[in-house]
Length: 275
Image 1: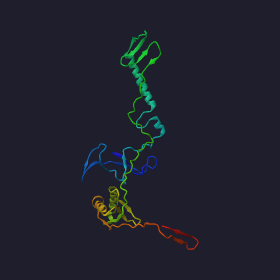
Image 2 (image 1 turned 60 degrees about the vertical axis):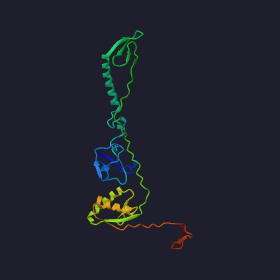
Image 3 (image 1 turned 90 degrees about the vertical axis):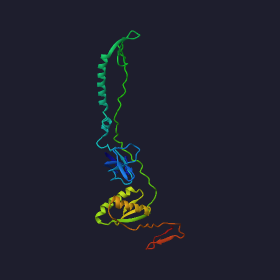
Image 4 (image 1 turned 180 degrees about the vertical axis):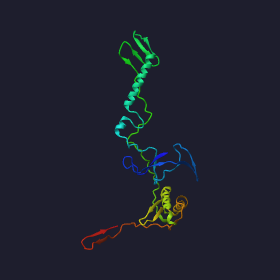
């Protein structure tokens, strides 16, 4: 099945680059450690979808509605040539043909009767439509317009994403450095870190300016679980890990009593700062 994957930055009225097309390979139901593949699911069920996670960072919206604005102009839309809906002129021609056929059938089924005023009236046997032969006035039922069985897709309609998932407002405070035991396993480890970032909502993976891969977590237990999944599930390679450490950040505890002043080398400019 072909679907569109809309990222967290997708905006139908602005930036639409955060979107991609994917093919759903399998739909499964999670049963503990096992996955049960099913052909389809009804709304309201939790499921696992395989084949759409290549462009998902943390959360995304999956829909089967694609961008149909390309190749469709406003003139075609005004005529109604969208999603197989016929134009008004075509519908009018079809209605005229149907009315002509109905008139031929009505002539065969007409019978002449006398009303209370002594006027001859032509009555159809199958329909309650009366036509007076003495006057030119015709009383006919006004048929309703045919129902459109196919929806009209607007050229400006694009799907809107769901509100991105808001995870716990926690900042990771412990980080570790990782590197593969064998340099040939570096691509596997990088792909494993991406999968790790999707699996753990609060976990963060970054690449420092020196090229070092680091993992940020909220505690040693979370990092221990993440490293097990990285080695055994995602990367399936030996990974070396540094000791966890907490980065030090300078902060201001209270207002200083004395101002800190400084002046330039030429003694012309000076400034004072109170923290």
